[in-house]
Image (tube, rainbow, N blue to C red):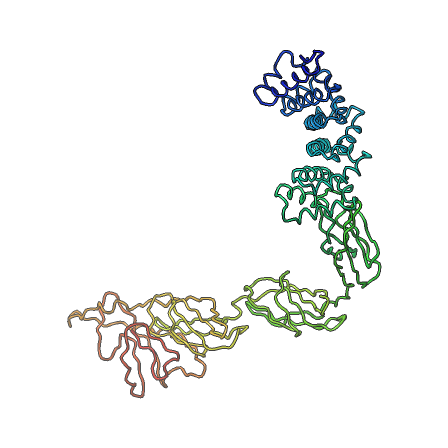
Length: 610
């Protein structure tokens, strides 16, 4: 029927095909029919029909076929697809509103694929299509205006198509029309206009074109501020305004002096939503110092001690933002030289006392001195000395001191030193002298380097405290024979306890330990004991300020015991140690048989023999 000569029959046949292409299953059947290619070719020819109804129904059939992805592929895969595109572009200027409106929708759908764009850009009629679409947008018919916006936005979504739209002489009229459509009575028309502007603003060049329009940005702001604007329209408008947003005021740059003496200025990166390339303008004292895309700039400082004021400005094509607040880099102050005569004036196991002299070149009033241990700040003081505490014994440290003014910190004076061993604070030369089987005489010297305020000495024998006082000697009595005794002496001061090195001595064996096992022989079996020569008695060192015992007191050895002959104990005590005294000995107090020690030796008695 499409090939008949009856125009009404042809129009009705095209209308029937339009109804078939409206729903999915019937459209699927239509596209898979053996005559599908012949049908597309006949529809292409009917687009140029002089009959307005036939052309309108034909354009409707093509629009509904292009509504699906499969239908677009069928149209673009036709052997004469470029002829079809030319016919659709020509139909944009048709007098019938239905034909042009449906042709615009079909072109928009075909531009939504890469294949359709490639075929369209190969035609010289692209510029004519843009002019026709802009004219349709300006028409009073709402459907045609919406479909023209749709087709134009589909074309501009591609970068090459975007360039075609921006280079078209019809662009100023298109922007005027889009601005007018923003305030259309139907918000659907306004939404299509806002959507088209957002697509145009998706590329940096489009942002520039929209910014150059004298009214568009203001019209978008009015729509965004309207209380009656719909949510979908508001999203499109705010998205476009974000692209058109002017450059903001950047944060101040950061400036510092490098070790080489050069000055480096750096700033944060800024990426506008417009995707325009940003250039950074750096000013020093109002004069342009740098312009470019880099994020830092370094230069050699020319004037010593000069103060610099840096400001940063963002710049894109067609827009330059305000300058940042100024960053002030003060001129370099002359720093003080290092303190003189830096030395250690006292040391202990945990503390070091330091002293120094003022620097030769203070470069201004010195406010305080900073003291460092290694690289860590220990503290500061306005004095010329300090005590560094909390140190480990016998440890090496690197200490530094520098002078600080109100604006600068000077050079450091450094020394290497070592804390004392904790033994230097303990009593020295601990000496033990063994006197017989039950006495040890202990002496010691004062510490080489007393630590803190001295209180007492504390003497320990085998871990037990036996003496606490200020004397430097002690007589330990009633000790056990043939026993090792380890002795230590501690200096108790205001800073703690300092213990000497231990010294160990053993008391001699008791040669008469079995005397208790002797028998009293019968008179007939009694044999006289043979006297032995007296042995030498060890000399007892005198304690400071003390004597050696009672006057006339002496010790005599008893004769040696004969193994075979038992000893006979008599009142004369000839076979034991005998103590003779001119004066009557004082009564000896009863003592506990355990170890007994005193801080000072006895003056009236000597140790009795076992």
